[in-house]
Amino acid sequence: DAKTTQPTSMDCAEGRAANLPCNHSTISGNEYVYWYRQIHSQGPQYIIHGLKNNETNEMASLIITEDRKSSTLILPHATLRDTAVYYCIVRVHGVKTSYDKVIFGPGTSLSVIP
Amino acid sequence: EAGVAQSPRYKIIEKRQSVAFWCNPISGHATLYWYQQILGQGPKLLIQFQNNGVVDDSQLPKDRFSAERLKGVDSTLKIQPAKLEDSAVYLCASSSSGLAKNIQYFGAGTRLSVL
Image (cartoon, rainbow over all chains, first blue to last red; front, side):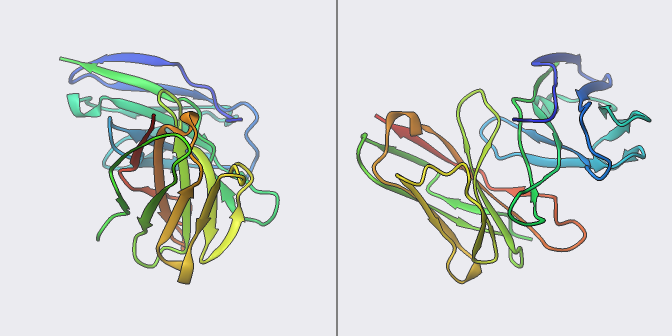
């Protein structure tokens, strides 16, 4: 099962900031938070990731609470092309080896409205 | 840099038939993943390869699904025989073994319809 919970859907007006929340209350100290998004009929696309500090790149900003139990992905000026399903993922470790396993939940469907 | 290539993009078969999907990862990426994505759900990991070895196939229905990654590059996923519930998008992803090793790059997927 996914270790994160996200709202099923959200709307955002074009040009406004989109704030997508994620709850990961059982996160371990060495687990990162990753965000991906999936535009219709495409494969998921990596957006950003972080451990405990806030992160920013050309696509988005990631705000992680001090207790690391939740985070928020911020798209500063949403456009129609940002309409997609956004997945928040906590990286888990496998049983057989020390590899990293990604478990996707159902994500948040973001609709950017003109 | 070329992305992850998958083929075919679409496939329609009847139940009990067999089908195969092909994936070519990003050059130099050691890790390759196959996911199944049913409509309205997030992707579910089926199998993960590290070079040409399997590191996780715990969710692969081994009575009908098989996958191989010969020479640690291209990979094929096969279903034989297919069932109606196998209708889904099959996604391939790859990641490197460097500092950015946990960033997965996905292909566009193969949409399978089983009738």
